[in-house]
Length: 215
Image 1 (cartoon, rainbow, N blue to C red):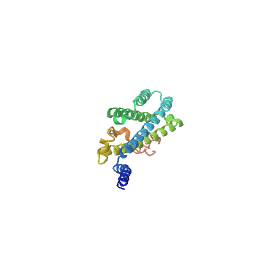
Image 2 (cartoon, rainbow, N blue to C red):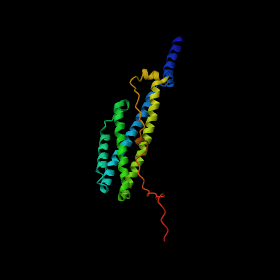
Image 3 (cartoon, rainbow, N blue to C red):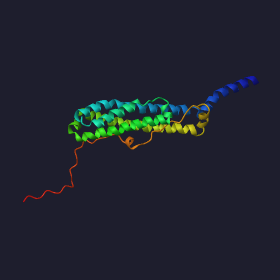
Image 4 (spheres, rainbow, N blue to C red):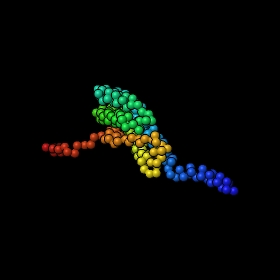
């Protein structure tokens, strides 16, 4: 009888230990890590979507504003730099690599804004349907990039917090000793808003002197 009780006690312990570990948060770190990684993949996807739009945008602008070769060249070079930055799973835990990636993307955001702005000087370009469609797609993509970056930062903050707070810090030091904090996107003026250009006609000059009455 005593041996049966001991056997039942051991079986109960085997059953209860996983439940107790789950209650102590042993699965919290990998769960939050996977969420952060999924958010990072979404950021990369949105940036790639933007890169895919740029060649057609450049060619459309060149057809109406070929003399703007400096800005066009800057856009092409910035796109090349952004797409050539090596990105893999280790990027989010490597401060230097992450900074290179963010800097390249921010540079591209800036030159795209200048490219769109020059359309103000070319009425035919502003009314071109292909340009309007590309500009709309680009603005939509920039908005999705902003959302993806925000979601990524939120997921990373949550994950990083789990690495240094009780009780999950216990698992971070033992079961998940290889887990490292992830990097955050830092806000910059160029990343706060999508490049945009107004297609509204200029407002009338209300400061002009009134016309002289007829004599």
